[in-house]
Amino acid sequence: MEPSQATEVKRLVASSRNSQKVALRGRIVLLAAQGLSDQAIATELGTSRPTVLLWRRRFAEQGVAGLLNDAPKP
Image (cartoon, rainbow, N blue to C red; front, side):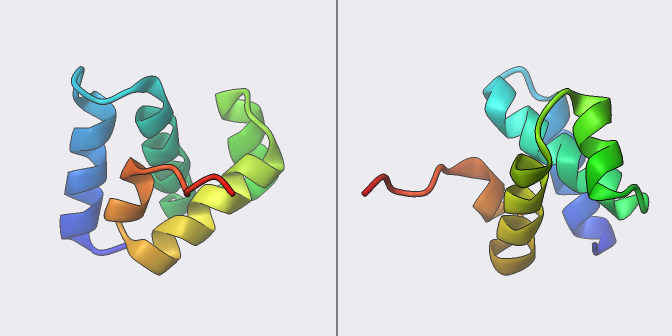
């Protein structure tokens, strides 16, 4: 993760304007950048490993913008 991306993700997590969903997504990405395993992140944040994998992939593909929006429902 680039330093500018890390700064932006930290802002998302800290901002009271963002939903808890967005804050969780940011926390996932920040913990991944620290080198934690997917399972360790899931345990730490009280979520599932598939959720961690989803948001790590979305961040890798779309950057910070990928954390802000849910995927369209079919």
